[in-house]
Amino acid sequence: MKLDKIDIRILCELQKNGRISNVELAELINLSPSPCLMRVKRLQTEGFITGYSAQIDVSKLGQTLTVFAEITLKNHRQIDFARFLTTIEKIDSVVECHLVSGGYDYLVKFITAGISEYQAVMERLVEMDIGIDKYFSFVVLKSPIVKSHLPLESIFNS
Image (cartoon, rainbow, N blue to C red):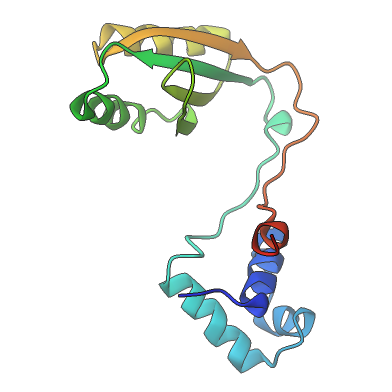
């Protein structure tokens, strides 16, 4: 399915407010409610919209720790990547995991209750023998910019 400008506008508005009513959304994008709803349903069916969720302000939750870890695997066979991912996706404190190019294999974002919990998670991962060769941890001190939306209009107008 190819997206048109109206689809992009719908996605942009839903990123800003996933709880917006169909009538309000239709009004914002200058479409009548019925065709707007049909487009939203089509975007869901086609997998462009994968779900709706609440955005939580982590700083309001009390003491938390955000850590980015660069993880390098010992071997680079497909089975090694699969074993690592199968294990890491089951860890609640892992909120993002990216296979990257460069000097390491994965960039993983953890959110834990504190440094002790993070250390325990990493020690458990190393002990599980899932192929981790080495890892480097970067503790987040402050997050002055965190965006929850994609720059859809600039991506599709390029």
